[in-house]
Length: 205
Image (cartoon, rainbow, N blue to C red; front, side, top):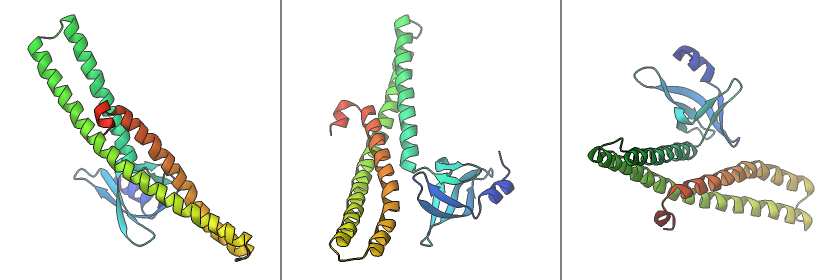
């Protein structure tokens, strides 16, 4: 583990991108808790705004700093937590069947596990709703960019613009398309994973 001084030297001024390769900006600050542990980074975006990125989203390598979207981190955490609660309920029922736990204690523990499970289901349901909305926005962005790309090629084919203008348009659009497609695929697969975790009556709503 790096000392706060070395950590700051390793991070400050560095560029940071998201996992899809899009530049997020330049690291200008390190947020710490009262124990000096890093809680996140302050990043100056290309537009000059300052955004906070929590430490759970940050991945450090010797060559680069990348940020995983919070929704992806949250989805991974919820998937693991729900799986753990389900395993504990099964294990508890196994103890009951073997007679290794008193009935009163069993019911108390089962109620606690069920309460925890329902809490995680509600969190998952909320995240699923947010991801559905984000996927819709991402699809709309993809549709818009694809139309611009087709229009640029159409304008060239119809003689309305020259080849240089067409290549300029295509070159400005395609770099934005690739990360959006990757994000869309990631959103779709994450959404499917989360929806499969939900009880059937919740999933259908």
